Image 1 (cartoon, helix red, strand yellow):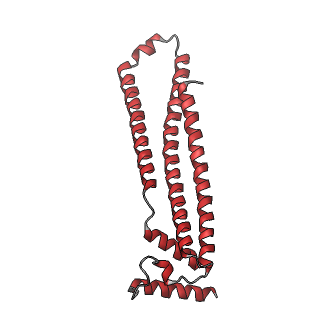
Image 2: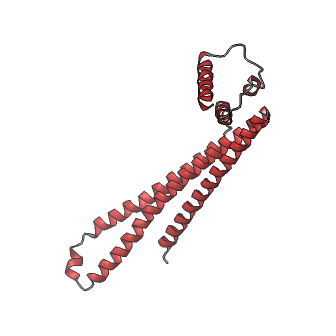
Length: 198
């Protein structure tokens, strides 16, 4: 097995590992949502927020792993093309062995230019993949937005058929004096949905 074929194997193996890790993160996200639902039903707002943050973090982790796996799969595809091209080139060399006239007609400068361009594309892919990995790792270090946490808590509460108390939405600031028109509209829609379910 040549170095290029080993690299291809390693790339495919890494892509499979990333897909497995993404699937595990997806399962963890579902587990955290179930814990969130239970915390909402038991009226534990602080614990519910923690589970909501965990669920959103696992969802982001799953997406980042899938994106990275997709990128690595794309690189593996290009390496597979290179391996195939090398095998075809080897077969062609065996077929035309002894045909010096045909070999002299080939423009070696053009072949060399194409191979140089191919190598530079691999280097560009390596740089892009490295940049993506850095961007992914810095994106996961950022905290979970509060709006996403509140939205997920509301969604899980609706699925569980539990009414959210006002203190759960904003425990640190207390109850708001008046709800905005958008919140009232969403609450009305939520009530209509619950009425339809019953």
